[in-house]
Length: 240
Picture 1 (cartoon, rainbow, N blue to C red):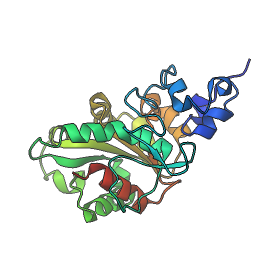
Picture 2: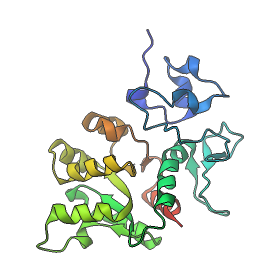
Picture 3: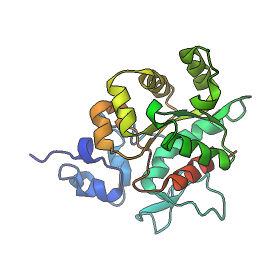
């Protein structure tokens, strides 16, 4: 009996879904991703709030609905930022929440969850790229005052941020295995359902081995887009 490849490879594109030996029979041009919206264990990939390719609420395909790239509804006319259809589907519910929380006062745009070991490397790079694009970022390196309670300040940062991004690196995976501070931040972000994972220097397969729940969330990957491109997509996602 053919086994579904979603737990290992994910169905993050039309071609991946069509190539799955267990699911290809349920896949058709007309149904697109809707066939998988209730896939057991991976509902976070395909939330009912996502729009199917070509619908007015979400994706505008660049090549007739079956292409590999699309433009989300929040992308402004003339924008040079390019998204895959999987990225649009992953980011659409985040954008919905950003719009709902837009009127709340004194919120940072982003809470950046990262491993301590990455604070001077990729986490700092992503922070600087976002701030250079006008995104306000809660970042432990600048927002936790010396001598203050680390957990208390993290709680405040989470409460005062519109969305959370998790920089998933080999260092973060090591921290999650040890159930440290990063694990507590991640649990709070997952509970709020306002989370975008950014995979950097590792894979979703490695992430799912450590955190199946976070690994079920589709997000952005620096293996597919550079860190500046990732920052550009996040900045556009969070723009008023």
